[in-house]
Length: 258
Image (cartoon, rainbow, N blue to C red):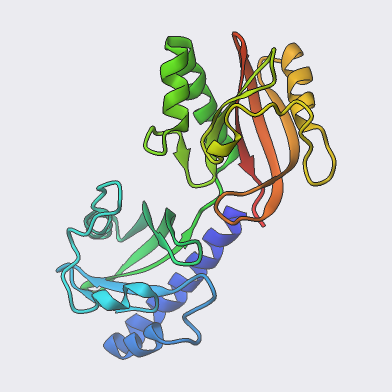
């Protein structure tokens, strides 16, 4: 769960900040090598208020000694500047941005907790590749609005990687309610035009049929099933939220974290 990851990151941050207060720059060595300040997923980095990276236990070690105050994520967010300004104003905080997750070889959402210590900011972050149920529902309602405005334009947008409806493991799928044909699938374009009425998950569940059945009686139906996560490439439990819009069933699902 994200709450567990957040607690682990905050715990490591507290230990790192305490060490830095005690040892000063002598703490940079332990921060930058395998040991007490690194786990499989978490590491510490330190940035001076002047924007210069001082230490890192992760891939950003290549930035040590460089001014990164204007460093931007793939979406153009100057997250280091936001972190430095937040630390100066409040002493601590959280910043969200997108960064390369080498485990999955793609940019994913990252949440970083930070604390000001002397003339520097100590930070620990974690990746959140799994979208939440709230994010899935929000994308569903955006998709419903788009398809009501212009069906064909919406379908093209849903299938476009740069259309704003494909992010991490979150995407839109659209199935015809009469012909059971796929009209949009942000994660698997090879599914387009396929008839999926008899499709079953790895456990044998006819989840498309259940979506069609439940969506007749509910404004937004929820269906649980197993499906391959496009980020991790593993079969995971997924809850999809689906709504009928004219002759289409529009859906967006959220995966359960491993």
